[in-house]
Image (cartoon, rainbow, N blue to C red; front, top):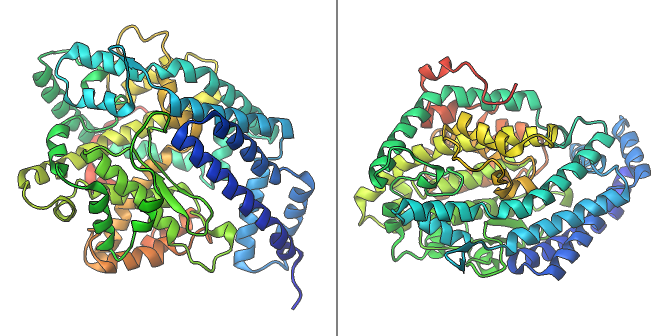
Length: 538
């Protein structure tokens, strides 16, 4: 049987991509853990080199020819060809533009990693600022901490806008309206379906969100002794997390080793995460990225996470979340070709990470994570989960709507747009005096994880569908048994990128992705259907 020319191409091309991608991920890891300017330069250089591997127009034309070849029938070969076509398409731009985008992204990453605002004359980390917003009762001190969290915006805004210009330039040269539309297409996400789905979930849960917001506002007004609440009344800088009971819930992890508790949690599913934690960077220090992420360095098993762990319920959730990404990455069928040893989209890996993170608030799972001595807090955690889901859903609407507008019309008054969307979706009033600020630019994802944020809410929706499926297939929704672990490994992780993400959803749950499971679990009210306006700009 003759070997198709595409197979010969893969044998030569894929090792080059694999080797260069590993080098890029290693440089990225050094940059994110140190903030080193040399690492930023190296990361930018290697990023450009990886992108340029997909830049050759003759190779792209050849791939298009093979795509029309009816003799190419093998499903794995056809899927690899699909992956390559999408990778090549977005890189059919000038070499100079490829290199410029890569270098500017690397420098932006360095700014994010190394910047620390001043608070009362001292440099403050993100954890420091969140601690003030979590515990401080003096409104003026809270406001100062919130304003300090926004200081980075004026540094980042010009860099982000330059990247937006360059990304749009690339997208338009390839025939797209803008970079946002291009990315949805290349991610196999239908733009009309996405906005309709998110809008539908927003409308149907609107009354439930209003009830939660009323509960929050009443509690915060009483706590701070004020009638008018600014965004600094919340426990995080973007009002995207539940501000109630956070200090009390932190007591659940008093004396708990979060890494050990997380290891035990996954062990109950029959999954060993200890090797991942040994490779990971878990605690904060100057120059280090203050966020959290998981990376698969080589697609050969070198999976590691970056965290900045503090003894809080948030960091228990975050470690469980990042390890959820890790077990997904480690669960691909080892026989899959290198190109297919990845998620088909971020939606399914986010679903795994999000369903794992939820366990930090589930009574049944919490008993195994922190013990049963603090029973009243366990019930509060369960109630907090519903609030968190509704609050976060509104934050995703803000981010998705803003980002689509950012790329559609980047020269508009972006801070005004930002606060208009916050008021519309989150129903939080814009504070006075922010007209000339750059609050929109403070969010990490806008610069360095573009056209990504919608994946979180779709991931939450998929997570709720997975829970329904686990109850049917395994007799339990909690991630506390080897039977659950086996189901997830076989149905969710093992396929890798052998099929598009929407087909994987149906493969796992037996139905397409909708918001019904999430709405049923966290906030469907028929009254919500009366919402007339779209959450997205018309």
